[in-house]
Image (cartoon, rainbow, N blue to C red; front, side, top):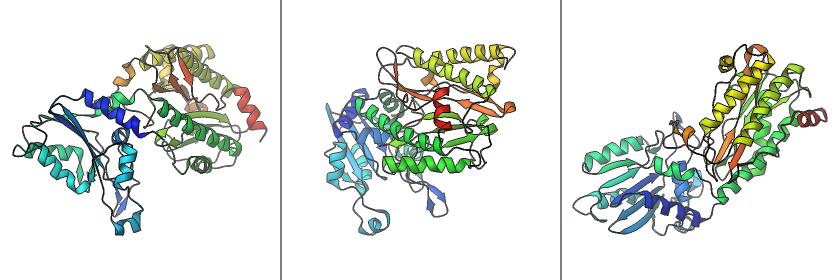
Length: 428
């Protein structure tokens, strides 16, 4: 569990980056409608969680940097006996204070009055506020029919002189470097993932359904991590299905002598593991499968040996493309290096943390590939080859912690060597 002092430190860093005479508002969000009166499982806004430690829906964080002072406010849903009978216990004020390190904890219905008192020229509770930072994530729903973008339009209509800026780049930049506590959570998520993968390997035999293996993984990690669930929807793809990167329908029966590609991860206190392993379900690789697997594994090891501060994900991608192209050319899978795009068509890496694909600057921005790596960053290492005409796909993915001298493979204890996999699988 991340201690409250760390959330306080994160907010201090964020306030330092804010302009004078500004305030910041971050919404935890509310559930989204799935269909009719059904709501999708609630997911807390990860930027809000990063700053507050609060995962309860309907919560709001307000930071102020005005008149030479800083102030912090947390707004939470009030006690409601009727709703608690239906949906469970809500945080008390004291619990919210203890978790977040924020002393000023108020009820959510007072939030709009507080904003009006700050921004209305007739009141100016915090002086002449000129800028408001708002999380412009495209998917934050803050009321039954209101997003942060709609809220921004309303604010500018009521207070046209205020400048609205995006806090998303500020927070996601802070999230790049992981603390010791965050790395501890990632190690725990990886430990659960290792147990789940071992269970899949024990059950992965010809005749089993792909979804049975995905269910086995979920069952084992939930037993281990306290029902925290998956980092992302499990990809469990056998045979030709493994040539589809995000294979969505694990309904097929695993065939003899096929490969099984699993891309999966457990969560721990919202921190996400992201691991891929490819195994021969009959126990041994065929000669062709072994050749493809050796190329991918070799690239995976090369990237881990190469990753270090100062390089970028783009540098790692260029190296991966060159390695895979050269090896596939030598193996006779392609006739010229340019053809590697047929078999390898995704990035070698992304950042990992509170999101499986930890964002940088914006949810869809690709500038993360040009960020110089630094100690404390956690990235994936996931080369692959996808050969639909040969009925196979291979990916080997590890999670790397960038260190002063290079990197640590956080997932090193999860078997991936050809001999180790065959030994484990033939002993079942």
